[in-house]
Image (tube, rainbow, N blue to C red; front, side, top):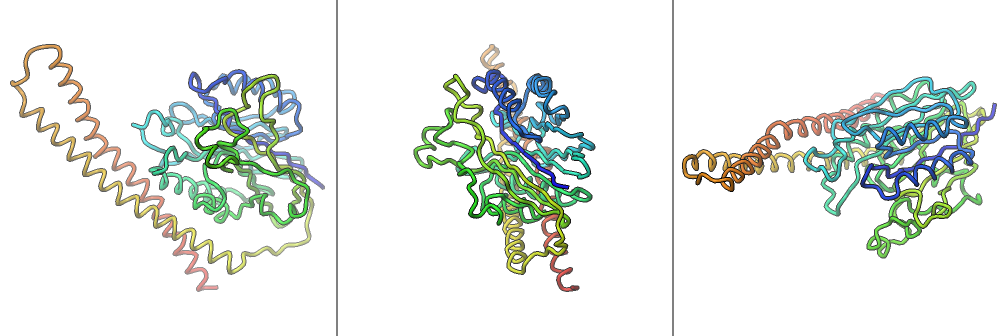
Length: 397
């Protein structure tokens, strides 16, 4: 029996108060989805529960099944809508997820992770994974190790939960472009396929893909970044894996939304949407194996991830010394200055501020540093165990 999956993903940029034109854009997204033929929809950055409830109510007649992944302080921002019954759900929250003191970034408060909805499509089981990895924010990319371990954790989660599903779909804002380390981890560990490189797309009249972030056609793109790279970066993806009993054909793949909301001067989001239509048919080909060259590249990816994590442990150890040294000196200053402060409001305020900063540095150098270091070590040892076990299995074979 043929199964047609029409998947849609979009980072909706739905931050209350902060995001421009949020309510109008959410309404426009709902209107578009009602008129579309997508039967599985993955949305990110739906940070307001009311926005999710609005979408759930508007889309109920066409996409009657939905699930919102609650997590952290603000919520994960992830939700899935489906034409078919959502049979099982699970949310895997990442241990490394940004910094609590980086309030303006907010990733830690979202309690980000990867959500799984197992959907019963006729006689087939489809695993739909919706996720949103940590952003770069700056050229220094202080979150590289966090994002790499989020990618590896996601890849392992997909790999371990794929059975008994017939099809696995990973959709979302991965904040990583094809060829990047995080992207390679996600596509190589569970063998997920990027439609751009799939053999059935070759010589087909498929819509030309554009960058999904900071694209020149998006009204919210950063003008400085657009001048450097008008096409933007392709960091939003729909990846897939089918078991050996099925053959997959890509019917359509592209960026479905128009540049602007009809009748308005703004786009649907600060990201461009991605859609994928897969035609799945029974297959007689039961043998699918990795080629040797692919296995070698796979090992190189793991080794590179290990290197990034080891460098991060050194950085964290250095930051611990800085935090503790600074906090200790401030504490000694406060103790040594007892009795020397003049008795006025300004002095009282200064003491409160210095005490607060001192407390912050000591907490960052002790509790928070230990949490981050242990989370990093957990990911590092998992990576090392992964590559070690694969080498030993290869020797046994």
